[in-house]
Image 1 (cartoon, one colour):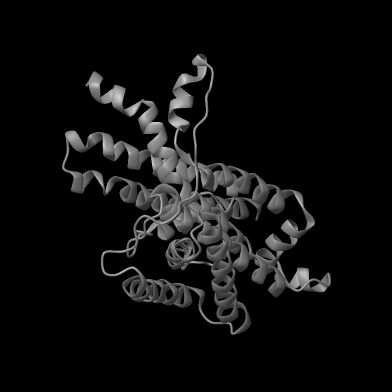
Image 2 (image 1 turned 135 degrees about the vertical axis):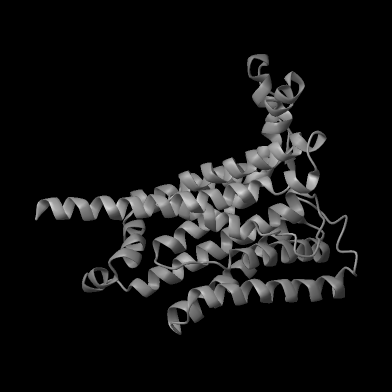
Length: 310
């Protein structure tokens, strides 16, 4: 038992938690933008997968992880525009478009991967740098936990702060929230809510693309495999709902997912790996159940207050 506890509360578990949480957090903060704008973006998994492939492809073509990142961001913008075209401009159902985007991404990246890299996938491409820092001995636990993390981990922290400030501390963030909650009121103020929905979709495309690049050029150091998003987009969507689309809370929810993923790794010596691999996804389901119950309780409480007022 002591051995298990020492493994759980160790720098290696902290490192695994942060590594696992980062791509989910990147997608979740982008999903928070579309959620505030009144768009249910279930297509984040496809956006992540597209970012992972085109980041790897850009690195393969140009021999630079940074140029691969730029290509992935450009593709993320295009995918965000495409998503907004159907959902905002053509008024299509966002759930259907999101599912179609996920299916399309799996097929497209699988075909392109076979064509460019072969059936074994892409390996050994130029990756993004990892950061190694020296902290004082008093912070040795934290220092060991932070060793070898991709530079995109630190970019994620900056993006969480930047998008939180954007949503809650800027006029455009107010317009974004109004576009989802009170679009008619926003329109009477002379601001088109459709414009804010386009912006939210583009931001989501960018952060999901960066999440994909983290997988292929960050965490896996220049490797691409088919369907490597591995349902992280759905987990990110659960984090958005659980956090009420607050970017900071969505990051904390992603950390919780990452911790239970790391916990599953620690338990593999005691439980079947097939079961431990399912732990983060079980926690995700429980998160969604909690959100539904919380929502129902709020509605019930509101109804009771109205009845008492009458």
